[in-house]
Every structure is written in C-alpha cells, then in structure tokens.
Amino acid sequence: MQNHEVEFRVGLVIPLQGPAGIFAPSCEAVAELATKDVNDRGGLHGREVTIEVLDGGASGAAVARTVADRLRGRGLDAVTGWHISAVRNVLSPVVRNEIPYVYTSLYEGGEHTPGVFCTGETPRIQIAPALAWLRDHFGIRSWCLVGDDYVWPRGSAAAARAYCRELRLDLKQEIYVPFGSDDFRGPVQQVIDTGAQAVLMLLVGHDAVLFNREFALRGGHDRMARFSPLMEENMLLASGAGSTENLYVAAAYFNSLATAGAMDLMGRYVASYGADAPPLNAMAESCYEGLLTLEALFERARTAAIGDLMVSAQNVGFDSPRGPMNMRDNHLDQQVYIAAAAGYDFEILDSLKPVGLCD
Image 1 (cartoon, rainbow, N blue to C red):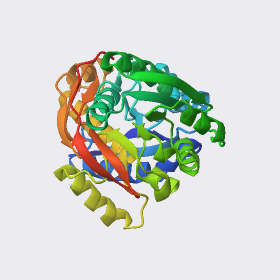
Image 2 (cartoon, rainbow, N blue to C red):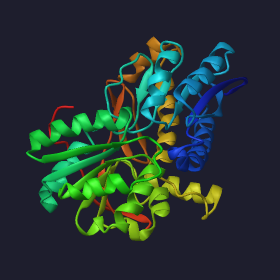
Image 3 (cartoon, helix red, strand yellow):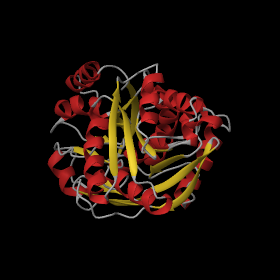
Image 4 (tube, rainbow, N blue to C red):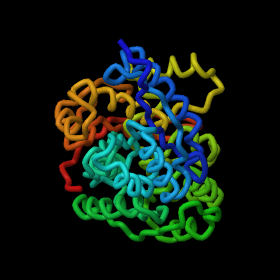
C-alpha cells in the first residue's frame, strides 16, 4: 500500500535550454510514464513518486544551487535525468552521501561518487566496439574527431585515442569547438581537409545538427563516413534527411528497437501523447531507465540510506526497453547496437560485442 501522505520527491534534471534542450519535451513525457508505472507497482518503499523538473541546461553552478536549496528544504529524495557531464560533475558533490543520484546519460566513464548510479553507455561498450565494427565491415582505418569542448567529449576522446592505438587505427586530428557553437564552417572544412575516412562526432544536440547541415552542404558525406555515440531521432529530423547520409550511430536504444519492452513503451508513448509527440529517443528513454533503476535499488535496500542502496546495487538487474540490465560497480551493463541513419529514422545493423579493450 502506498503512503500518500509522504511523497517520494524525485528531481528530474533535464536541459530546458541550450544545445541539448532539443531532448527536453520527450524526456519529460517519458518520465511521466515511468512515474506512473512505478506508482502502479506501489511506489518506492510505499511512497508515491512525484517528479519535479529542474533545468539541467542552466550553468552547472545554477543547477547545483537549485538542488542544494531543495535538499536544505527537504524537498528532494533522489535526483535523476539526462544532462551533460559538466552538470553531473557539480551535482555529484552536492548529493554525495545525501540522496541517491541516478545519472542516465551516456558519458565518458569513471564516476565513483558514493550514491551515484550510472545507467548510460560508456566508451568501453559503445565507442570501442563501434570503431572495431566499422573497421571490420567497411574498412575504416583513419579517423578525425570533432567535439564540444567540455568533459564528455574530452574524456571520450582520450578513450578513443587509446582504442585507436589498440585497434591499429589512425586518429589524424582532434578538433574542439565551444559548447553551443553556431558556426561550423571552419570545423567542417578542417575535418574534410584531414583526408580521414571518417569523423567521430562528439557533439551534443543542436551543435551536431548544425555540423550535419554544414557537412552535407560541403559534400562531406560523399568523402567521409560519420560516427556518433550521441545522435537520436529529433536530431535527424532537425538535420534534415539530406544531411544524414553515411552516418552511423551506436546506442543501447533506438525507437526502432524491436525488443518487447521497447515496443510496449513506444505503444504507450503514442497512446499517451499522440502520433505527433516529439520522437521517442535514447535520451528520453534513458529517463525511463532512471526511474526503473531507482525502483530496483529500493526493492532490494532495507532503507533509503546511501550505504544500504549501494549494497543493494550489487544485486540489481531488471528487464527494460533496452533488454536485460545488470548493475556492476554502480554502472548498468547493457547491449549496444550500431545503426545507420535512414531519413528520419535509424536502421539497426547489428548488435555490438565487447572488444576486450581497456577504458
């Protein structure tokens, strides 16, 4: 039986502005579905879950202040959501040993703050196998890299550098642009001038959209492949079908994924929000995983204390739209797929297998 007198308050930190703001409407919609599902099953320790949306697109300092204020007022019992690593880096110390924090974004790896649980893909299971797959299937052996200049692209680039050495690939150049750039003429020309067979894109949201448009305008897709670990259906729509040829993406979720859980979520999403709702995508679906992870942690923990939740995390596993999920070292292992952009959707080509490389 739920205790309706004492709600379990979850701060959903998602970007309502900036380059990643393109994801917010679908993230909020999916979180509402997940909240209903969890409450229908009895909530968390018998408490009804409620969601408060917090703007993860503000500066890191502003997000940290907002969460700290809510904690002082006993207004939050947990934090989850998709947001960039720069925000996670300032939130982790604020909530450390206070409340659970389920970080749902793909990220660069290496987060071990007590009480932080990561559900997204890391380079070990996403970038490394994709580089190997593209080498083996298309003979791509030379790369350049373009990324936003902050934590996730820099950390992922360091991992990609190591993977290229071990896979005997040539990483010709790394190019970084300010997060929130609006002019990609120079970076695109730099990429094309490298003569590489492909470009690894570590760009977020609208930045990637603008890169795609400029890349197509200059005929880059006729000369080079593109690979991104962060590209979803809204970004395809915003880029335009003519700007996404020869583009490959690795992720644990696409809205074309045919698992039973994925098809069920898609059906309920369309039934709830209509066929014209923002496209269901990996960033939004990750917010669903965040609520499922909180539920799985609380099912196994005796109390809401961080120590008890961390002990319970050792046995967390559940089925989700992505398929079977199992927690190891406070991170969820999951199947990652590689897909090709096909107009405004993705054609899943293969499931990726770990390649046994270090992070």
